Length: 199
Image (cartoon, rainbow, N blue to C red; front, side, top):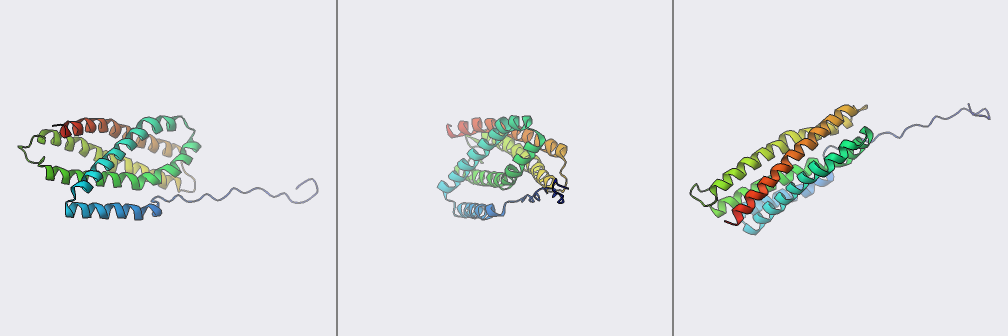
């Protein structure tokens, strides 16, 4: 009751909006990118393949390094509510960005290697290319087998009526740690790629 005898009204919290695990607005953009990638491979457009490989690889490298060595330490110092708020905006975008970059980089890169004859065992760059395949294979496995599942698990946990902050924090640490590993491996990839292009 208030001082004037009227019943008091308790403020109610605004209902929490469900987090969209896969941002649907981004899917048409991903579809256009992947369709053009398939066309570029089928038509063997060297310039488009090189663009996909270089742009995709550059973005993949930059995002891994940024998340692993800039976002990661910042997230580690945030409170759990702040970490959860950041994750609700950041993680859905990563669900569609990272797989798209991985696919466009690897698919276009393989086709470029075929065109340049680098898959030929007697080719000048064959040994370097095998090393690149090994490094990129591990990175792709980490990206699709650790990063993405951790990412999706965070979003599903945040969509629960009572999200567990400790679980979110643990999954985010796994995500950032994996991004740091792939970021460090990206440096090795850059060294290999510059070696191949200057042979």
